[in-house]
Image (tube, rainbow, N blue to C red; front, side, top):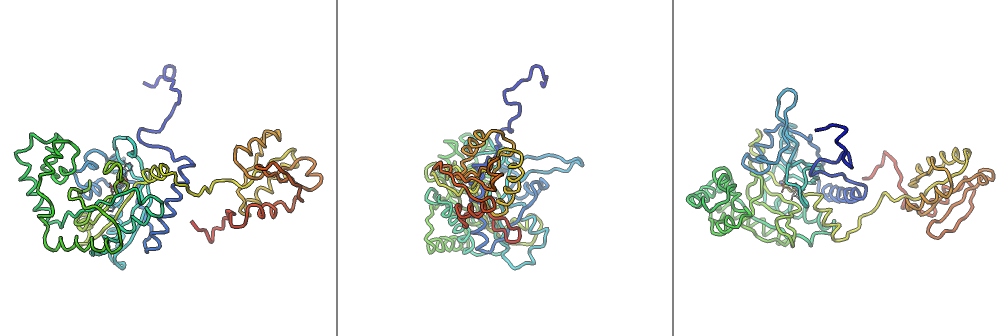
Length: 445
Ligand code: HAM
């Protein structure tokens, strides 16, 4: 009911359940993570891609698999005005592969290496580290089959964690789920094992047994876990080639001194994987709070209508990374801190300061002016609140004498300088290397 007389909530509008604002302090983390990701991946030859926020639902259903939690329960699906079914992307591998095929990227030198930093949407049960809109960064290498690439994906993901200062907090869980043929044999073996034991399975696993028996292995229900312990192991159904492939991945990781834990039950929650799968688990909380995961998906390009093309990739959740960085008290550069506050009194001073503020900003000084505020005391209080290290004061006397006062806010000391020397003085104080110069032609981000 939305009867205005009766409906009087304290805060009239709030974000929908499971989504959140990214406030300025968190943006400092976002900016830092984006910088690290861009730097590391650009260095390795990756290029950025942005796919649309929504795709035809079929793209996700075919890629992720109809019997997965994501497709069954977590997609934001809606019809457009012409009745076409669209879905907000719950992940980005499907969209990137769709783009690879649609944009003819198979004619480029292979592998095509792409990365993204974008919001994803899942109708997940909101809880710590689990949101309905969340940010992922990720990368995909499409067009080449070699265990060195799988190892490279894990190496790069770990390198990014290292740059962010969090790599020691995670265990890399590693497994192989074999080729599509190996999987078929293994899935049959799993079905044979579970048939007749349905009464000991949770309700969810009973339905999954037909459609997606691999997921029974990582069910968190106690009885299901006991059964999973005794279930046939993938390793016994791997072909000789798949075993060799996995051994090579491990050898490369060992060579690169990447530590990992082999986990034969790791299957991942998306159907498109083949061979190598991996996740970065919180060393304390385990699978609950994985910050990232990935693996090889050799059948996906073909499944979405392209040629038979191998691929491997990884994606990480940025909110979870930020939570870890905060817990570890990792400081990120605060680019939003201002350099100088401008306080003025009287109309003439205001006119002079308007121009001064603009010129200071052009010079790279991050400047705030209290142009709407009246009393000087009030303006200085504001300067304090903004944590400005310096305040420039221009009153009636300064206008008359062609000067300005520079106040060091921490020390409380003041000096009088010629008005036309204010900018040079300020640059000297802030230091040239700290200026925030905006030059569109040479923007470094
Ligand atoms: P994923 O394991 O579904 O893989 O998601 C990757 C990461 O996204 C998770 O480890 C987690 O940090 C974060 N994440 C997932 N759901 C949520 C949520 N509801 N709230 C907050 N964070 C979340 C993929 O998405 C694959 N596309 C990875 C990949 C790329 N495989 C190959 N290439």
